[in-house]
Length: 325
Ligand code: PMV
Image (cartoon, rainbow, N blue to C red; front, top):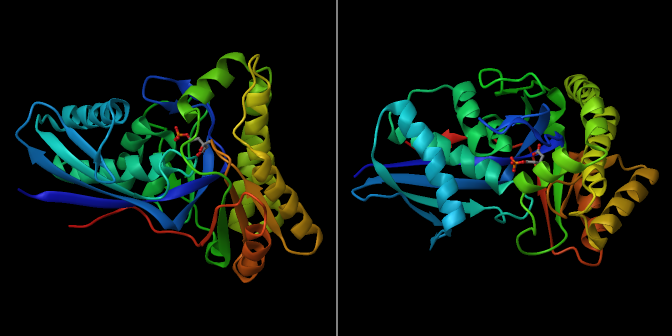
């Protein structure tokens, strides 16, 4: 039997997608800007099997029902597109902590979509693949491209328009993203559920939306121009506004822990000391710090000493998703 394998690297949003304009098709309520990372990725293989159901193994372990269903539903959509019916043995290996707010669903759904497109003989370009992967995980749409990537979204977005595309920015190769792990284990609440709660009940959600496109436009312009301070400032505003929406719910919740706050303080201290660096956090406590390549060692040394930091990984810009065949 032929095995189809693909690898996709994770990406981290500088300007966040948070909320849906429609559940059907998983359409993002906001656009987003991300950086693909070189050191975190997922590799997924698909092999057709003679069985009534797909079998999904994550890191060599048969996945639980929730994860298996999500994968099978994504494959169902692709099987319908291809007018095919075969079931698959899916083996996925995360070279990134799973469900921890480190974008494993981005690399996971991008690798799955690319491997499945080969297995189902769908001939698709990166734009089409990004539109399909978006249905599995909004952030996965961005992992089909190297470096800076813009994902389209917004209140009027439809299936056709909700795709990702690369942004040319010369500054990319001079940047590093230092990933600071501030806890171990999976997060308590998934991003889908958290988005729903904030959309439906946060008194700050409309303010987040109202401010979003100007931040996104400023950040894209700054990346293209190589204006690192402006890019970093927009990045910090976007993450803090996203996390603030969770505090505005009648039953507030948060992902950030004491270590996260200490790392944020130290990033500001480094900046006051003349090292330009900026933080961002996703649906988890970990902090990703954007800095210039020449400062990455210094940033790593400073942040690595903070109590509660379990691991630190300096990443450069990573490649687009690729098939192994
Ligand atoms: O792709 P999802 O459904 O895991 O959502 C990602 C949400 C954030 O990571 C918080 C923001 C983003 O744009 O990646």
